[in-house]
Image (cartoon, rainbow, N blue to C red; front, side, top):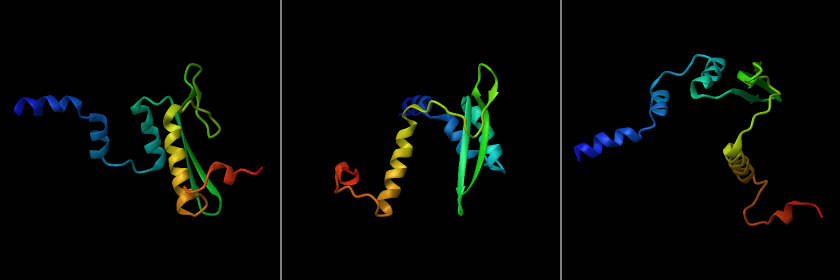
Length: 111
């Protein structure tokens, strides 16, 4: 049992544990700047506020090879991370009553 406990420490996601324990940065920009610590080339964060006001925070590069910094219009390859955004969007539409799991896609598309 002791050996199993010691061996299990190898599989602990230590960067996540460290992020959980460490205090949060004092500003959003400082938090975004920490993305480089997680090996992100660049990041763009958009915070939507009431009244259609948006704030953008960027860090890193949109083109690391040419040292072009990230900007709010930068495009990144996000791979399967888009599944998270789709899930959140669908959940919000369901909770607002704008989408129903009892309907088909044809019910929402105009003919």
